[in-house]
Amino acid sequence: MNTEFEEESAPRKNKRSLVSGFIVIFLIFGLVAGGLFAASSTIQEFLTRFQVEDYSGEPGPVTQLVISEGENGEDVARSMVEADIIQSFDAIYRDMLNVNLVIFPGTYEFPTKLSGSAALALLMQGNNRVTISTTIPEGFTVAQILLRVQEDLGISPQDMSRAFESQLQRLPDGLPTIEGYLFPATYSFDPNPDADEVVTAMVDRMESELSGYEITLKESFPVVVLASVIQAEGMLREDFYKISRVFTNRLERTIALQSDPTVKYRYEGSLDSFQEGMKDTESLFNTYAHPGLPLGPISNPGALAIEAALRPAIGDWLYFVSINLDTGETIFSETLAQHEKAADLYRQWLRDNP
Image (cartoon, rainbow, N blue to C red; front, side, top):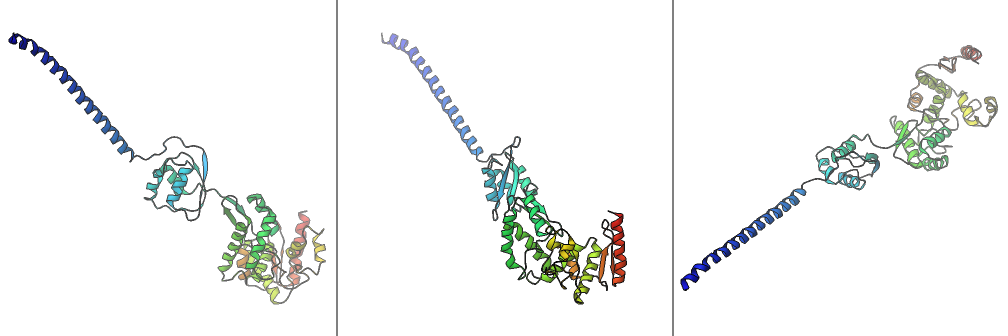
């Protein structure tokens, strides 16, 4: 009886063992698969730490970036991320550290959604800086400059006039206006400059020009006044130095300058003719009635006129007259008789060119 029982129970035990084996294998496989998945996820997270988020598609709309004075590469990189110019800080900052990057304050235009390398290239080139500019020609008066600045920079004459007042303390005492001290040149500014910035730049530029001759703004009155008259009279470069000599000779001999532009400066636009302006002998801008320099500058002279005022040509001329207003041809004379003959040529030119 016992033998038969033992023989029948053996197969059942083997079946149970087989099932248990399958379960163990399944569990082991599950553990291995789960471990591999977990390991793969961990590796992916680890590698992600070293991947830089960077745009790679087409650039987006253009935006402006303002770089302030004193900002460094880190500041600029963060501003670029905020403006969506680049996708992440590391997209550009690491490369910034490896190049000779000089950062200039100003306003710049960048497309949005740029790669870090493309954004850095634009920043290094600097060609995307946004500026507005105005060009003041030699000989412009303050009245003309006010109109030009309003047109080019959008600054009102009233704001400019207030800015003029703040600069007068830098200039010679008793100067009637800022005339003569707004140096003619091309000036560029960041968008929306104010009047003080513009006027300061012009006066600074005049100060720089005079400093080349070791002349300060405060002591520059006779030079700038004479240069302003030369600027108004001259047409050809070589004649500036001769005109300077004529006026210098007259000043040394206490002969009235007799310069038409000085009379026109005071009265142009307010009297019917130049001859009416000549009648105002009380005007200190009337250099026919008053020997010496006029009350103040009559234009804003450029570098050539200033140099001519300080370095006149050598000669004994006391007169000059332009005999061709188209070409600027001018005759210089030592005597009144010579001058009258030259004046006849001028009058003939006027008859031939009505």
